[in-house]
Image (cartoon, rainbow, N blue to C red; front, side, top):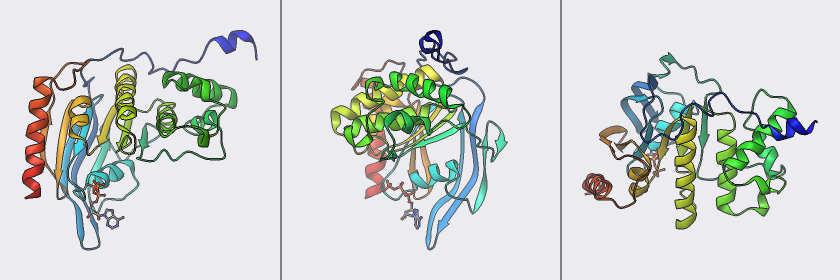
Length: 268
Ligand SMILES: Nc1ncnc2c1ncn2[C@@H]1O[C@H](COP(=O)(O)OP(=O)(O)OP(=O)(O)O)[C@@H](O)[C@H]1O
């Protein structure tokens, strides 16, 4: 490989698409759900969900345990099949392609593969050289360039989740589904991951759906917070605060309190 090839990491077509956004929507509808229903035995987990998400929006989903948050995400990801209803991506029903990636609470890395190879797993169609260069570039974006030859076991929990983020982002997905990905991290690592996630979203322009139990996190990150109760979206709350956001600002605190009140009301 020539030195010039080494010095010029590949730039993905979407990489410079949306530079430093302060708000979400960038045009078009990324995702449309209509009448989505899912039953597991006696449990009706989704009860006819309708939802439109504009392209580039950051959506958080909150709700008490068992309300159906993960089921909605798993239906969108194609990991579960709906009993009724439709899912359309960019206006096309059922066509997920390679444009969708998902992150879970646990990083799900391959223990027998080094960090760089774990990120390369996220690339479908690229030759080995190009895959390595892309993976190296995205590891730099998440601040783990120096760890690319490590084994996952040698990393901290936060670093592992950053590798998982790199693996999810390396293909530059248009839709990123996040199922409580920061839930197992300590408070400080969680905050720095929130910053990393916001920066990536701002720079790359993907649509994000984040399931979280942390209402502070939801209002800090999202353009919109959906409250799910018993398989239905019961509230759709806009967070119209420009970014970068100040934690605990009066506007965010007011929105957070109203969401918490709704969730607490559900508990009673
Ligand atoms: N594969 C499954 N088999 C049986 N029941 C399921 C399955 N997946 C989900 N459920 C049930 O569907 C309901 C919704 O579950 P889901 O995991 O979507 O909730 P959640 O809001 O994500 O919960 P949590 O916040 O605890 O993760 C629950 O009653 C759950 O027990």
